[in-house]
Image 1 (cartoon, rainbow, N blue to C red):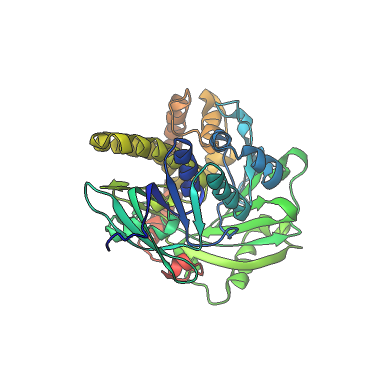
Image 2 (cartoon, helix red, strand yellow):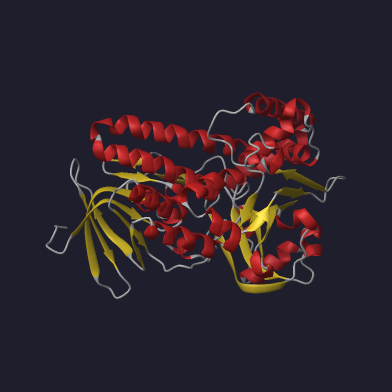
Length: 445
């Protein structure tokens, strides 16, 4: 590829107009950088990951979109509810007001089509040049120089930019991670999901109406997320070996799966499906490195853990804020590249490691027992709530209570060793599987 007279110049070109890309674009534009943001689809578009965390709210406030989320998009989410039909106490709610940071005692549930569109439009308002229906087809990285990026619009016309830096926020497309052979399947975790939107699902009473509901069942767990306009998002995150048994359309298989959970089936006995039911898998992965000469990967383009603690959007927003600071400094001080990138990776891995410890163990009998029979001795319940609130990127007084919780977990493992051993074997078996029954476009690439 060679630059031509029609080539446009920019400081930063960002691939992907989801939460990570749009947020990074807005922040860098506010810093005075010339930013181009390319989104392959057109907003609004469907996406799962509809439950936000309290610690995302100060980030949304800094971006200038929190009022829109509160007034026009979101459903108030005071806490997270966990349910188990196999425990005598079948229902536990963790209220965010008990987390360490009392400034953000709630979060919001959002329809991602509205939320992502608001962030994308905000990037344009802040000064970024935003393009929809623009698919990147080629990037030429020239070490020590600018990079040339080509993209095709919906009409098939080619557009070229010369960028001083490229941010990959392409989500599960993992554009650069795939290109440079950096993408790895997570050896410690694997899951697949089937999901859809429904009407006529009763909500909890009063203050709890907006809480996310999580239900364990024999093949994994369900989410139920209340959205605006009477819609509820329902999905089952399962072991791949279970979803590989699907021999019918996704909607029928989801109904079969719902029947396996008495609690979910009871709430959905009058539910009406809205739109298509979809399936997806193999979404637990990471990149060996987050950056190279002239580029940085953020959000799902870098790694994805699991939907269970609604961490995806929070990790995307946090990585966008960190990346915006790093890239802004890199453009002025390229000699500090190694130091800045290393600090960014340490910051992101710290939070991901905190989430991952709980995620990898979420389906174990020991973790279910602790979540369903919580005690606040040594403030361990407050520590878990602080994690559920997304407060995982900074030191807090919850460090010691978290260690105490982990110690209690390992003691519980030993006390229930036969069941725990069976769960570990199930996890190892599924970690080796690849799920090929996804219906999303990203599953077919």
